[in-house]
Image (cartoon, rainbow, N blue to C red; front, side):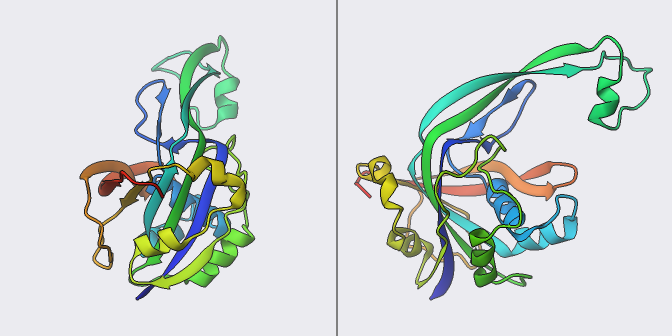
Length: 240
């Protein structure tokens, strides 16, 4: 038996960052590990440049996700002013420095979102941890910083309602969790998918349909660097 902290994630728009190349800012269809760690870090009040605290949180926290519906895809575009490319120019350390340059140009970037996405997340702890699940639960109930789902334009639409379950495995925790009644229309006929990381302490009876690499394991929050990990995926055919 193990304790699991379980909470729901829903917003009209979400964006779970994926590998970005050039002007594209894509999204995955379910929460990324980096996004979930960022959510917990913001709730706890960990500063972005506090590498030690972020590393401790990453080492201790492990996740499983039950995706009820990924929602519908939405693609938006943004324009931004940029300084001209000049290899001999001085180093521009801040956005203010960039905008102070003469002859600013414009670039176009594309950003992807998911509309009406609904998922439930289970968290368990392994090894040494600065925080226990009760502290994480309290932080999600009364977060230090404003919480959003991937981008600041994606605020929560319902309370996270974090609950702690003592069960045999993460799928029991995910399946026993009751989603907010106002979201019933989003999951009443759904065919949920399960995503999880197979760790030394991971207990599950689920058999993965396939496994896939994801580049969402934070290496450095300050430098915004990530490395790959292996994610297990189960596709289901029945109703939730």
